[in-house]
Structure formats: structure tokens, C-alpha cells
Length: 202
Image (cartoon, rainbow, N blue to C red; front, side, top):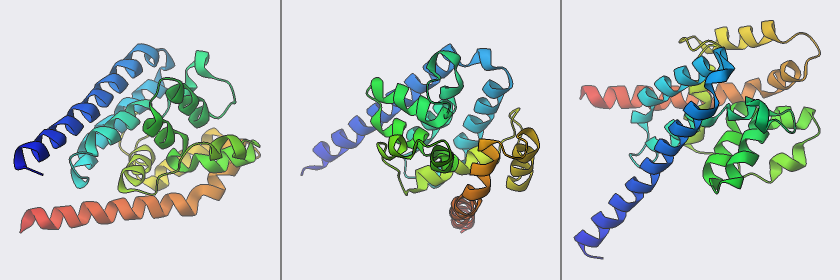
């Protein structure tokens, strides 16, 4: 392959992912402001994603930011169907031909555990679960952003979730089961951030 062709392919991929990011930002801004604090949380996750994206290959950065904009889109009342915001958002994205974003949103922050508690495991299984740095980073950004959009530690975030959802609530039960995998995703992202920071100092 000639150099010109290779660069044209790379530029084409950048255009596609850039359009996904722009579309995601536009749809989130259209649908989510009515959610109040949830919209503030989403904007905080996006801000975190903009920072964390530097540890990803350039072609992956727009995907992370796009998923950050849309990870909670399933809370919008007109999209609610199953009660699992991750699945409801994923179904909406699939219907719009955004298959990769649908998978990232479906499985963000251990949502498969909530789907299991709700009896929706088979529905969740219809969406691909990435085991990638991008998926890890999305979970990291969600778990280091408070319900109102502020930067917090993972421990603070998990404690707040426990506080907001009482004993026996499906979200609290699912989160208790998800914690080990969430901590691992956060740890992997922190390691990538530390490695990138060291490389920048050389």
C-alpha cells in the first residue's frame, strides 16, 4: 500500500470517529438536559474522558468521548423500556445503527450485573462486551465522577451509590457483585495513566 493510500485510510477513520463524537454530543445535548443532576454527571464524565483519552490510540479517543456523552442516555423517560438504563440506551443506539456505541453503553460500569439481577441477562448478551482500554476508560470516568458531575475517588462514588440506593435495591445488589470487576477496570486505567505520565517525563 502506498503512503498516500495509508494516510487517506487513517484520515477516513478519523473522520468517521469524529462524526460519531459530534453526533453523540448533539444527541446528548438534545435529550438529556431535562435530567438535571444526571446531565451534570454526564458532562463531568465527558470532561474526565477528554483528559483520560490521551492514554488511548488517537483513533479510539473519539469513541471514548462519544460513549461518555451517551452512557446514561437510557435514563431519558421516552427511552425507558426495561428499567436498565444501560440496556435501554443500547437498544436506542442500535436502532440508530451505532453498534459499537451500543456495546460500550450496554456494558459500561458492570451493567451486566444489574441486567442479571433484573432477569435481563439474555437481552444483555445480545450486545458485544469489549475487553478493551476504551471500555476500561469509560468505566473509570463514570466511577470517578459524582452524581452531580464533580471529580471524586472511586471509593467516594461507590459509597454514594450505596447511600442513594437502599438495602435490597436492584442497583445496590448489582453493584456489590460488580465491584471486583470495576476495581480491576479502574486499576488498569490508572496503570495506563501512570505509564503515559512517565513516558511524558522522559
